[in-house]
Length: 378
Image (cartoon, rainbow, N blue to C red; front, side, top):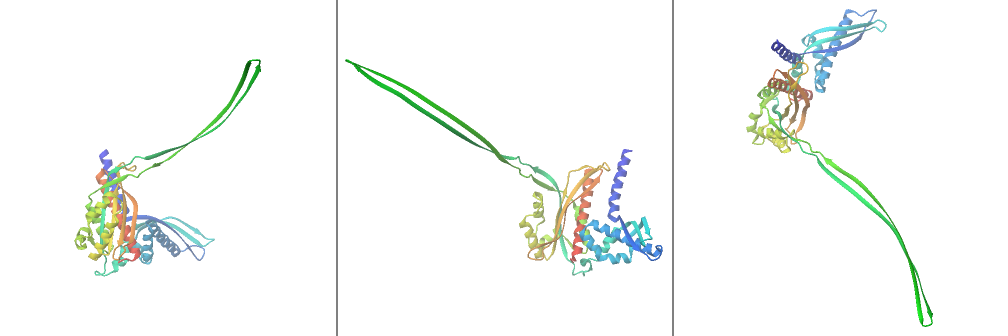
């Protein structure tokens, strides 16, 4: 019975990921004014279509700025053939205000996301370009996980300032008398002295302590996680967007020894950013090969845990990615993604990790291509 439950949970999780990738639900609301005493069927149909369009607009608004911009470019095409992009529509509520002659309707629609994405791609500049005009693109994405973390003890500095003030006051006095008397053949003398001393001292001591504590950030080193499937994901996504995608290993020999996949991986093993010298070598190497665009990024695998909803293993992946135009002397960033975290679930750690990496790679590639489409890059 427990095995059956686990199997059902895995199946539902996989189905949910697939379904959300191709079909999404959204809600919209719209109002129209009408003539006469009541809204006609045409008025209601017009309001329903406006509400459906609002639902699609809401879907793209949640997807981000670049997606919203792409939606504006194809709005008329969606209105011309809504049934191609709306699988079903359900009226959630309607209101007819006769005094204002206004009809309002709220709907929930199921969107054919695959067709919407295909429409966006077909409208992009790179998709409209001829075969010889399409831009070449090389990508290097690495997935990695923390291998070791070096932490440092706090460096503490203490200082004590002490001052002592002593005030002393004293006085002394000596008094005396001396006398002599002569009688007959005798001389007698007398002498008396007295002494008095007065001394007082005050001592004041003040102590002030201070110092500082220096904390040093931990140093992390990474080990690369082999994920050949990522190449398939990125290649497919960029190719469907219209780019002429070249594997990094295939482009390396044409760069005159300037671009090295191993060097990029080495930099990513010791930090989050590529060294300046590595970036410059990539840019000059791609210019030598005549390749104008380079996409670079990391997918950082988190520590596995338990998914509270399904009880399965859950692994998070944080993605950072950039797409550079290296055709000019000073490269410029054309698109950027992250840091964004995605999560995958599965019956074991390997499956959850694989699902998370695939989801992160798909989302990062889609967002990059969406930003490129919005900019009209071909």
